[in-house]
Image (tube, rainbow, N blue to C red):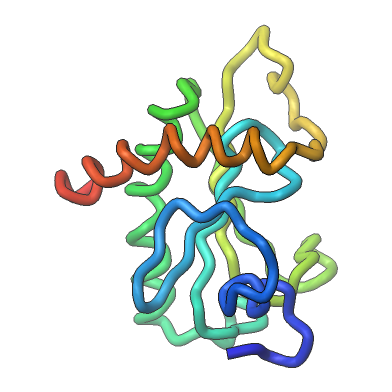
Length: 147
C-alpha cells in the first residue's frame, strides 16, 4: 500500500491517525476528520483507486454492500432522521482526495442546524472517539443481522 503521497493510503497503513469504526481485509471505515455532520463516515477501499472508473466492478459492489450496514449503525448511534450517500470522482466533482471513498452523512431534519447543506466542521479527536464508541456496538449488531 501507499500510492505516491495519498493521504488515505497513509491512513490505511496507520502512518496517520484515524478514528476507525470497521475494518476487514478490503475496506476501512472511519469517521471524517472534518465532518459535515455528527457521524460523517467514510468507507474506503484499502487498495488504491483514483476514482470509480478505474475500480473493478466487483470491488465497487463490495464497497457499496457495506454502505447500508455502516449507515444503519451510524444513523442509530447519532439518532439521525436520515442520511446522504456521496461519492465524488475527479477534481471537477469536488473529489479532494484522489482515492475512492464513499461519504455517509447523517441528517437531522428540518428545523435542525443542517436542514440545508451544512459546512464542514473541525471536531476534536475526543468527540470523534465518542461517536465511534456509539457506532461500533450497533455495527456489530448490523453485521450479524445482515444490514
